Length: 131
Image 1 (tube, rainbow, N blue to C red):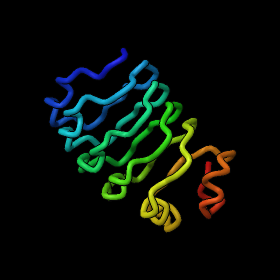
Image 2: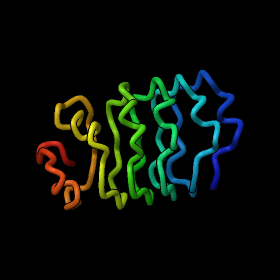
Image 3: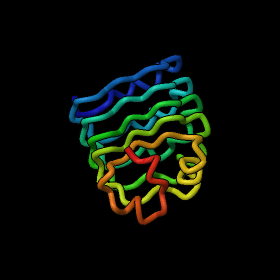
């Protein structure tokens, strides 16, 4: 599939969504209505950005966006206190929001990034945290 259907926002009790290995390029505007979503797996798609209002996912604990075309992480992710794992391997991301980095370095979140990403190393990330 190339798009996530708009009716996805009507599935308000949805806890797990796996749309990996598709050709998805963006998010529907109402996806942020999935307030009870705990796991969102969108690896191996063609996404170029995060959902702008990612902080609206009040229950999200696991987010897999590996192997897409995302270049930056939106600052609003810093407000997502429930997030425990963020997989962004295989994306040309060059920066992470400061508060997210702080949570990572304090062991409050696991962020999976490429070991070879020199931009992350220049931000002073703990070598023990990169994967």
